[in-house]
Length: 348
Image (cartoon, rainbow, N blue to C red; front, side, top):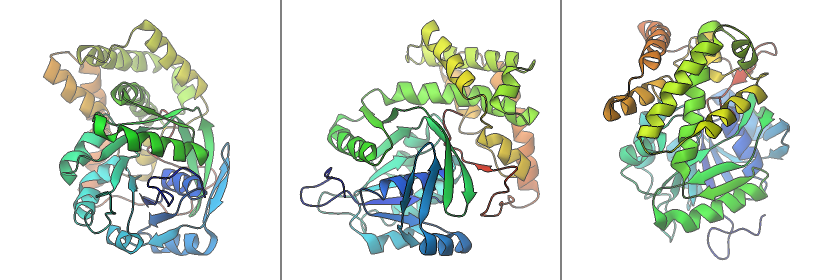
């Protein structure tokens, strides 16, 4: 166990909600330095993980055997917990928050209810979790790495560009934020605590909202989009989003824009998760990406016509998913030719 402690005398204790690539990566790495309990709803995946553990391969390496429970209520058996990571798609925030809110008191320790970390895409999921939970101890994590799911308990990290950022707008949480970042770093996920998390959230949000839907609509990797006429659409989306961020007071400049293009260039081999969502008939995260930029744009009076157009096109795919009555869920073991992506991958 790590010598980094959330409380004197014992290591930090964590829950992880979600068993996609990001949940697997987090559990496999963090489990090397702290006890971890995973919420795994899929019966097949839960059985696999109980028998074989969770493994990270590729650019990061790790293998651990976390405790596995079938639902969020099951976290009570691992109490007390210091932190609960929400590593689901942002489309699941409402249902996760409804279940988690009912057990926060039951999984609390002597220091109070656990911190909740949004391990997710989008600009506002941290705020949304805070509102839905009625809970101020919510942190946001911005990840700069990408992973694909190999089988029910294995994820391959294909892109790692640390540091990853962890933060909260509330000063009273900075001490825990520092301790958690140190623990994650000790686990191999190099993380920095920051009191400027909004800037990192917006940078990743701008990148995701600019590239992901374009790649999804053209069924392309990042590199294929950059080499095609669709690159011009990415540029328009990025410029509009940066103008919104600037009006919001984030303070991006041309150097930041240049760095964002460099990040995209470095991710050429990557295929954004939204591509996989549309391929498999799953709901996308356009509501947490482009729609959130549109909401901010409307509030500050900045035009965002390209985001409105691209969001409507992606909405048409989501409309087809929900018209059928329920989303299609891919099998827990991804096909080798089309590995399963996760919504928190890298910057995309």
